[in-house]
Amino acid sequence: MRISLIIGMLLILWSCSSDKNTDELQSKIKQQEEVLSGISKDLRPGQVIPLEEQDKLVNLLTEYFHSYPEDEYAPVCLDKLHMIYSSIGEYNKSSAYGDTLLSQYTAYENRPLILESMAVNYDMFIIPRDTNLVRTYYEMLLEEDDKMPKEKKEGILFKLNNLSLTMEELILKVN
Image (cartoon, rainbow, N blue to C red; front, side):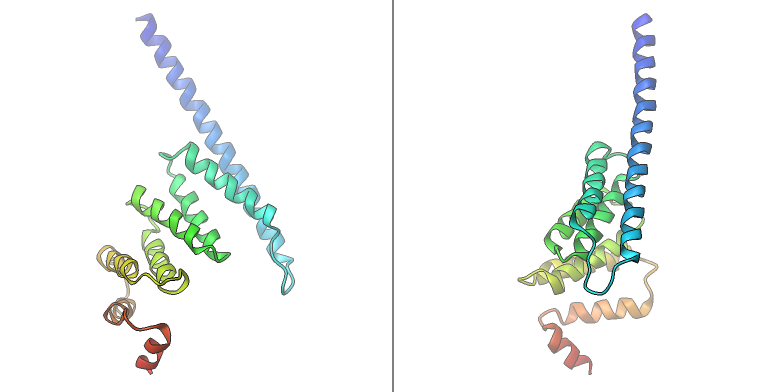
């Protein structure tokens, strides 16, 4: 009886400590996002956000995901990592985080956006172009996103029917 009580108390203490740690780390993430937002407001043409400031956010997001993979904020961290790397042109890293997000968090609310981003990465940015992955992600998007507007669905189907064409050839075909 006494051992059960001690184990129960330890579990409660560990749970409370875990909540405190997730809240603290989320707060640090939010603070660093605010720092980056402030820096970006003051950027002049040709200036970029300092790499060390961006790395701080990347490290916090990575730490959160690795430390609390079961937490509801973990897929949000992966989403942010996916978008950060995409925004700086590191499409392979972006896609790696996107793949992790899609495979580990199948019910993630922004899944359609990630699927579309992944398709675009493999279609336009990752060289050599991987039409098999483009097809995979677009077909997943069509299958899963029942709220997709008709025009968007038609555009994706057109793209799938013409995957063998380069972007230039596709533009010429449309015109």
